[in-house]
Length: 437
Image (cartoon, rainbow, N blue to C red; front, top):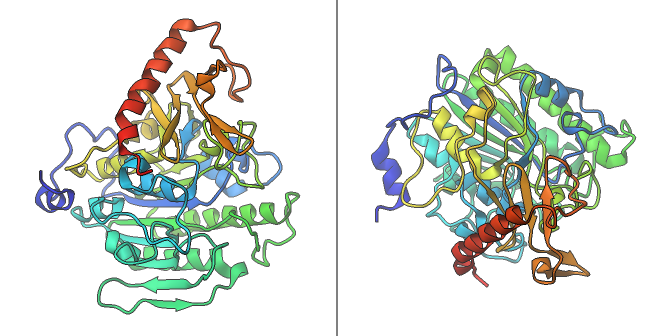
């Protein structure tokens, strides 16, 4: 079978038929993903937050589209980021279990094709600014080995040690490191991303601004300290909001805002602080939405609909197929892509391209979401993952009526329950053989 990287070299810029359902800009679109760390569904006004003021994100929502039922690819950092960059459920990449710790030697396999690699045949230049957390030893490190042309950031979460801020300009250039100034960290990430955008304003670019906040511990920039009723956590979210505002102003000043798709989202739900917005559970919790369902706000004037809220289901695995479709490029070949092109949801709304989404806790399929229904098979109780579907506690939720997943509808909809159980059996039969432990 042709390897995926060989496929990319052979494919060139062959268009993917049937994908151009959007208003084509004059040039290839640019892409900026602002990927926050542990930002909760209820932490921003655009998805119902009340306590922390986020005027710039809220304005971005008014000028763009909010996906209200968007799920991160996992309930933890490393697998979520692997899913986002590859378009594949994290279990396929070997990174479905827990997060990479400083003592670990695993990482994202070089056989996986990432977003920047998939975009290269279209002439894209790519930069990663912020947190990587997909392997910090060779051959998985540095990120320029995965298609990024420039990396400026951290190898993993900012609560891990040893911690240094790295700069990598690609093969043949020495990797440099410096000490971390925590109050200035998010500002440093943004400033370097902004320079990259300025330097590449005349060509198509992909930027992943992977902020390491509001992951604890929080150390707000002095300009934002003490401004929020939500303490240091709220101050850091306010700082993120200000960065969003600066980015959109800069794109407009460069004449690029109508050519650039900007998406704000999070790698998973909130940890010990932050708001899941009334959704059940939090980061690391299995099955229920609070660990997976996160903000998603997209803006591209003239292409992405303004002031729209779309409840069609989507997931982090959709980034790769969506961006390559918008760039009029093919999906990587040689391996199964689980994500789908969701550009139509941003440009005109409509139904999700997914019949179902699978939620994994580590390598276990623990829940299935369809557009209306949610079936939860496993969750944590007293520190252990429990197969609650095996003990008579059948958890079927009507997401149109019960977003908080408080009351099971299993007894009222036996036919739906039977269908969801069959879906779970099929998912486990497909993915359980891929488990690494």
